Image 1 (cartoon, helix red, strand yellow):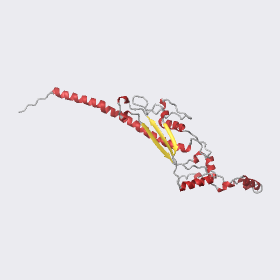
Image 2 (tube, one colour):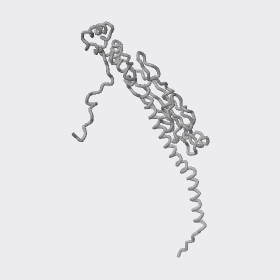
Image 3 (tube, helix red, strand yellow):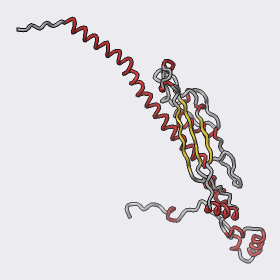
Image 4 (cartoon, helix red, strand yellow):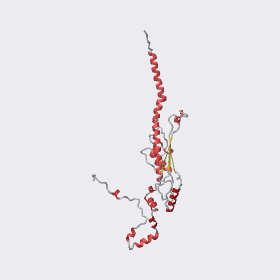
Length: 270
């Protein structure tokens, strides 16, 4: 016959030791992991907004030039600083802040509330720290490109044969709280998010119907009859044939609509 003795004090001691180990593990592992999940969401938010901002700036640069292209009557002019200000407020600013004309308010209060730490401090202190740069990639020259360039030169069409318009947006956030106590740890570094976007187009029609008509008119053979001699003969002939006064050589209407687009939609399935 065996007799088993159970030490209640020893069991309580082991349960207390397990609780202490759990508290220590939670303090050094679970709690940091909990906060890391929060900051991972904020970093993902910043990366997605950076990509959206790069796409926005790339397209805007194809329409809003930093300077008028040679031979073009371009009125849509914006600098990289203007595009930076717009992208910063559109994608990283508060929703109720209106876009200013040319500057971005530097107060941290204009930053999206998503970009704040759990202690209320800003992850992105200043919208003006966001960096935006744009450029046009050179296009490779070949037989076809040289032919098109020569043809446009003969026709005096000021369309520039260039590569894609590239926009680069960079956003740098603050490091994790307590990063000063994590020397050499990659999580202690200030994360930087960079995105690039490219658009291959020459949005010359976006500069208004006047510029569109001026460029298209250069491609019409009848446009070369719009000169002083022909117009004088047309004015003299207009005395005898009034229809000639309504004749306009090289006329371009960029706002024309097809007749079916101007008809009302059928109703009642008829």
